[in-house]
Image (tube, rainbow, N blue to C red; front, side, top):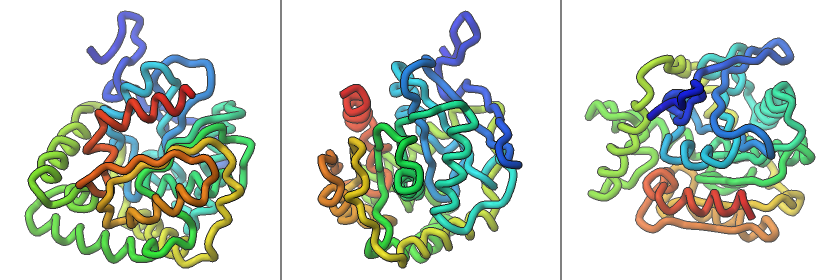
Length: 285
């Protein structure tokens, strides 16, 4: 069932797309779950829009938490131009969060979203209570500036076989990885009405440049992150090397780390059945 008798959506596939205006930008977003308490705001990955969140992660978290997903400036149905730096993306995220009237949120950042989340804490530390970082790494992390090369290569590989690039970028190309990839892509199609606008090529390239510059920047001082932090990844991440998740864990005091064997950048999607209880438990603790 996708909606309750009161019309309130009970699944991400049925959540309506809303918009809110702030600082000259109309931000598209969806929300799900009980309101009240500290909401969980999801920051999505490179080239993603609202339709790219796995409902097997969103729906169970939203059973007990107010979940908000959004398109940052220039992405999907949000207006404006994509910023050319991670720092500016973090400022826009703060603008969106405050426009909704939130004074404190938990942040779930995947891949590029995890980079934006780290900068959000650096620039707006009072906004974030707890942090989940998945498939990401720190500013100045070795290998982050190679994301563009890996991305373009896998986009080409996927095009040759008419597949979704995420099948190559997020999952290992063994039997288990291919099966998980097909299941993940199918889940992203569960929403059949009111789908988001595709991300434009120019926006995608601007994001890649921002990631490259962030990877080449002066390494971050992660001791400034004092919020409780859960870090997750697959142990064979080709996009954002898995060792960077371990580096985050070593450098963020008191952080928790979960690594999923024989999986890649999308390890949390391949092992959503294991990851969701860990995430829910972390948010409750």
